[in-house]
Image (cartoon, rainbow, N blue to C red; front, side, top):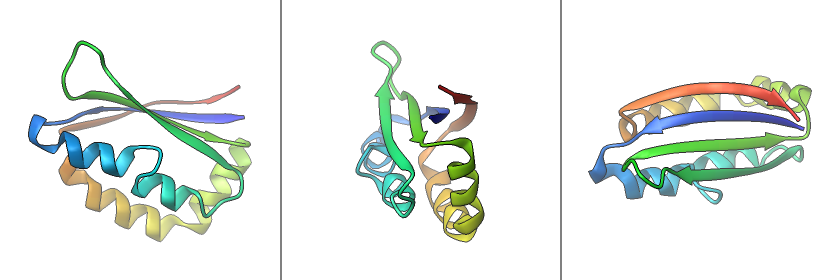
Amino acid sequence: MFVVVWQFEIAEEKISAFEAAYGPEGNWAQLFRSSPEYLGTELLRDAYISGSYLTIDRWASEDAFRSFRKENDAAYEVLDRTCDALTQRETRIGAYTV
């Protein structure tokens, strides 16, 4: 399994829209589901810091993730630009093999 982890800081007034876009049924997960090797997304909200989130995207393998990105680069970039307005800060924590 291959896992990609991102951290986000979200303004209070954008939390609802962010959760809708980045949650397990959100826009990102819908795009990722075009790959049969996408295994799911978790959206974690910090219990103590308002507007602090992690996403964990799971893929069958690193090759599956790389293939998805290559085949869907244009759609990925469009969605990324669309969602930029929802975040104050976005940091890729890392990409891990399990």
